[in-house]
Structure formats: structure tokens, C-alpha cells
Image (cartoon, rainbow, N blue to C red):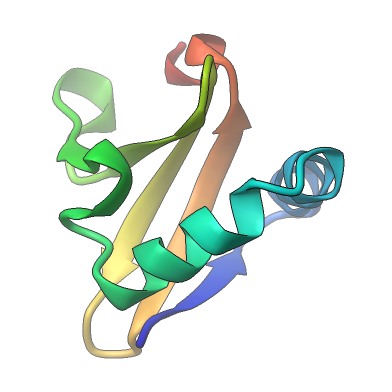
Length: 86
């Protein structure tokens, strides 16, 4: 099982606001922590976000993250609408 972490206060705030706003997100994150590469429509990103992953937390709510297999961590980069890609 992977654990969720953030690297910045801004990302941590985005992440916690999303979790506290909707009750359906914690169970989704639990699934993601079990397999961050296949759950929640997870997919690799391209272009300037190459090396990062994205998943759907709900309608127009996406999370961008990195996977550290050695530390068993999912490092949250951004949470928000599709605008988080920009």
C-alpha cells in the first residue's frame, strides 16, 4: 500500500480542500493507494508533465501525482479541475 504525500503547502491545501469538500473522495483515494497506476482512470501524462500521472476523483476533479515505488509514496502535485494541467 502506498501513502499519499505532498511537497508544498499549496498542494496540501488543495488536496485537503478536495477531500473535505466531498465524501466520495476518501474511498477513491484508498483504491488509488492500493494501485496508483490502474485505479481511477490513472494514466501517464505527456509533454511538460511527462513523468507524472493523473487520475479522476470525480466530475472535473483531477489529481496529478508522481509515484515513488522505493518509498511507496504517491506524491500529490496538484488537485483541481482540468486547469491543473496548465
